Length: 132
Image (tube, rainbow, N blue to C red):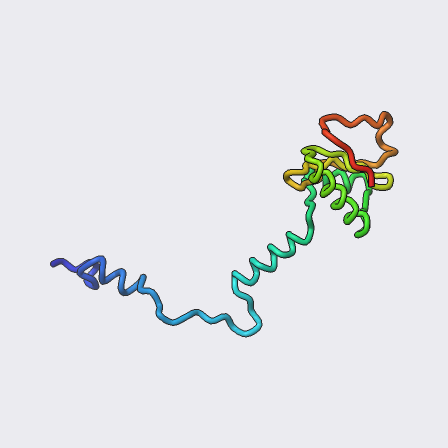
């Protein structure tokens, strides 16, 4: 039988040499986290915040100088939860002097505005409103 590159006579030998499963378990050095631990941490962090902001909504918040306090964010999440409980899909949530359009199934704030910026106060493509 011809040897491959003068080292191995079969693919099995290559497999044994290079792809052999190591029977030793991989240990994580002290102070470092495993992938699973990091994943669990990131998942729990994302679950703690019910709502996320779309790129468009984030741009609107910045361009309109809207900064929400922790209490306002909690009220916005409460409004989205109430909208979900009523079966709404696209909801207007009004908090203080701010209006938010929330895609309820995706738990995403689609856009945000200050009441002073909307002369006519007309909101389209929503199926309900929550005023908190």
